[in-house]
Amino acid sequence: MPLILASNSASGNYNVANSLRFNSASSDELTRTPASSGNRQTWTWSAWVKRSLADTNRYMLFSANPANNNNTIEFNSNQLDFYQYISGYIWRITSTAVYRDVSAWYHIVAAFDSTQATAGNRVKVYINGVQITDFANSTYPAQNYNGSINNTVLHNISGLDTTPGYFHDGYMSEINFIDGQALDPTYFGQTDPAIPSSGIWIPKAYTGSYGTNGFYLKFANSAALGTDSSGNGNTWTVNNLTSVDQSTDTCTNNFATFNSIKFSGGDLTQGNLELDSTSASWKTRNSTIGVNTGKWFMEFKMGTVTTDQGGVAIVSDLTPDGNFPASDATRSPGIAYNSEGKKWVNGTGTASYFATMTSSDVIGIALDMDNGTVQFYRNGSTTGSPINLSDAFTSANYPLFFAGALYNTRDMQANFGSPPYAGGGYTDAAGFGNFSYAVPAGYYSLCTKNLANFG
Image (cartoon, rainbow, N blue to C red; front, side, top):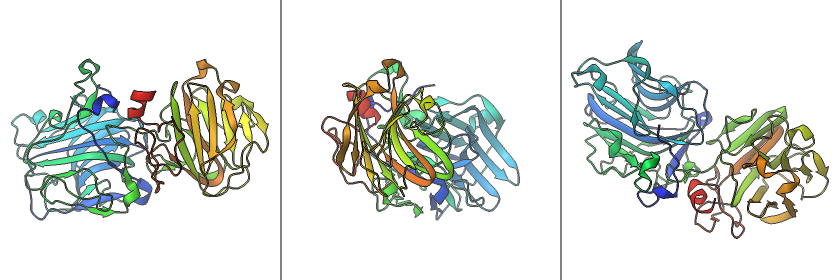
């Protein structure tokens, strides 16, 4: 299957500026009820999706929901599921493959055309430009079947009106709905023409017609996130989403987040950018992107800080799961800064090396893989001296990752350049990021366009 790298090679073709970050815990969704029915037998839905939580049941992407009559596209235990349910499944297409990569953007196209004489042509689903043909379930609608989607009923992007709790957790961008046409993915994406042999699937602008109920959501206006940019005026109602949920993490510039499938413990929310701990044990999460070369900067915004119950670190993929990489030498390799101001290098602590953290502090980390150092910052000012990476790591330990950790009932938020809070407007030298404090000269936010140029 083609990869979605969203590297700099895509920038010369079509740039997607914004996505919308959905948080399932706060029931984030967009809703709309069409004023009139469109073509219920023929339509296409296309969107780029980045998941946050995998291996959990049921995250709705797009659905129409009259009572006990659900026409839905969703992730169901990591499988892509597309069905009509009326007190039981009328038809259902479920992929055998699972899609659990929380670091990648997926392009999903669902094309419905019940007018087709051949049953297998009535429902087609594509991932990253490739049609799914291997199914765990494959029952098809009757010819000329009228589904709930495109009827005058409540439609949801994220969520399922009749069953609360099934909200999407992650990001969506470039949502197109085409009323009256069943289209293939080449209307919305293409293999990267700069490197055609790579098989990398990238977005392109849709230039066709939308039909009566068609819409295009590009999330360009943070004050009106449900705006339809198709020209039809089919605007969506925003529920529990605010301007900070507009993200620059997109299918053409993929930013790092916390990794929900590496290490364990704690609750991840806000598009895998917030870590919450609710018990008296260390909860550590690292970044989805690791680096071998280049100079990289990110920030952690601390929640309530008490004594030594929070910290930030640089770790290797070889650093084992468990306690924060501090006093336990078996958790090495690692370089850590804990909230009481102590430096930890492979289990050896140095008291009062850093400034003590207080609640709401912003802790910056400047990781220099070229010269082999890491410098920590507190609220925009350096704290402690640069630490040599060689004190903890060898080149065999690379790549290295940013990590955050909490103990007891604490929380922290990660900002790799697209924060889950109002940043200070500071960008890196490439113009990417939204940081609370100035980015050190020569350092870059951790996103794929920067990796292509500076990694």
